[in-house]
Image 1 (cartoon, rainbow, N blue to C red):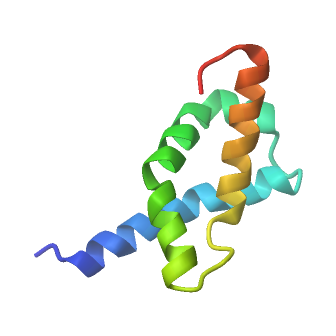
Image 2: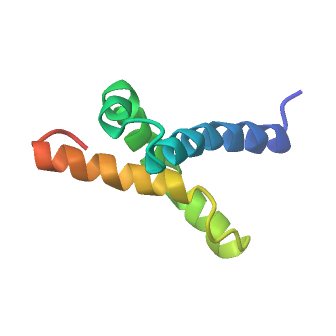
Length: 88
């Protein structure tokens, strides 16, 4: 039996994994270049896919900083790839 609550729980777990990695990068625990090479495309795609949902959480549910680290790493990887002339 799969319901909406279960879906949102899994979605938040998924996004929290990216937030965890992003927090590590943003605090110099993980190396941005290596994370970009390993999973940069996934980070870019996930943020693009769920950015409207994240904005919704921030606006309508008053979670002003939810997934903020994820958003920062998305911007950094996108900038890094644009500077290299790569895909984003």
